[in-house]
Image 1 (tube, rainbow, N blue to C red):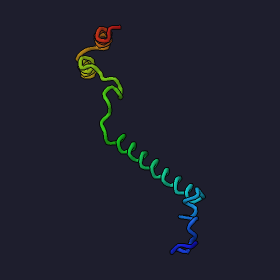
Image 2: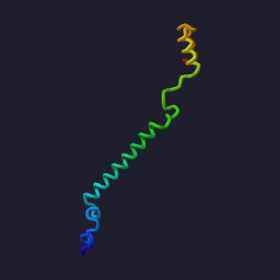
Image 3: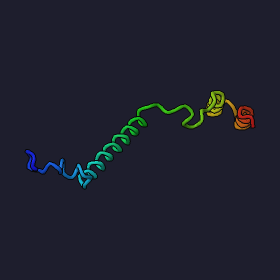
Image 4: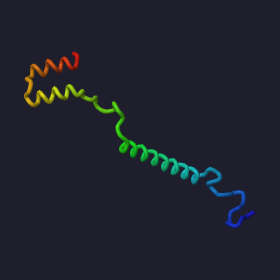
Length: 91
């Protein structure tokens, strides 16, 4: 028997109902859109949120920065700098 749309009743929506090529194309397109949305969200979050503590290079202790500055200004010589740095680092 034919319905109002010119298709027989047992065919329903055509290829979408019987798992034909149309259903697979729709599924692949939906998955591609979903993957694109997830990738976009990850990239946006990666560039907008602050870095986690400890994720970057190790922080230089303030005492070592002061020692470096004093050496750079010429307030202490190289021997004094190396000695104090060894004491600060404990090695």
